[in-house]
Length: 270
Length: 103
Image 1: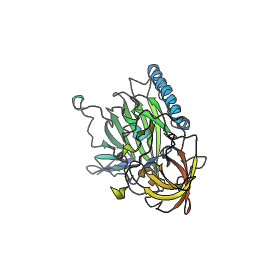
Image 2: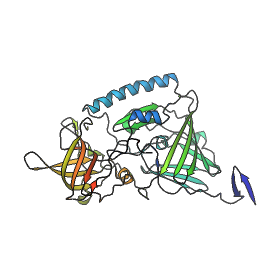
Image 3: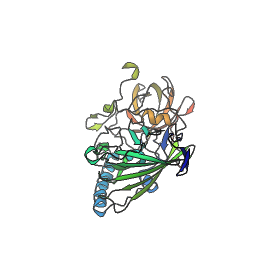
Image 4: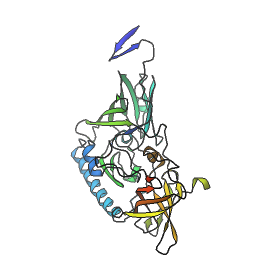
């Protein structure tokens, strides 16, 4: 016995047919360059990436203030000042892993759960077995939130709540959404509260592209829902996951008042 | 840390291509004005990012003659940030992309 549900035929009682999204994916426009920066400048990224959240006036004032401080700091770093804080966290947190991330990732759809695995070893679990989000007494904010989902034909609809800002990333004091460009260029875009609610529609547009249409509502920070679109392309240069690892972060010690290089020991000599 | 207003070109010989996390380093021997060799440390990004750019642990080997374009350290120590370069077989990977950028 079959039934027609939202454009896909499923046998009642049988597991729905899962799309094949195997392989490695990377965000279009966020590919890192060999110097560790990005091919595009921050100003170019800001123009192209729909970085215009509907911030409430008080939030925008807060963002403007920190952006002014950041721009001043970036200019000072270019002139030789030491960066304000060492990068210790390899993880980006949600929603940055989806919105502005140089990490490659895999997507593994199964009938009851879809798992997204990122090269930073961050994992998103999207439960599609019909469960609701945990109740209030059983839910607390995390950097990746709580995600449930369902399939509408070939589209995975993901509902995410309970995020905790990834405020240790870049040590900027609370920067859940940050745009990156160039080398040592970044800018706070907005702040998200634990009340932020995310709905994503993730689907394959052709064999080499995935599209994520995200709507973020945040009654604390936004005047209206924020709509964003991101495209991910299939990685063509390597066919397996390669992980990031923060081991050896002491590579940039301060010597005589300057950050300098201290390459990690040779793997052959460890 | 790196002086991005300056680009330095080094001509040298690979001592070691250190394929390590979190970042990869090129250790290269460069002759100074006195004719002696200095060891420079050139920092790149992570193996994960470089692998997607087409680099592999064997892309550079000890003894390879290379020309490396770098942003030098502000401190004037013998180190810098990798930009582009050429190796024994011509251009190394990782030269800046065309003007239109990557997709």
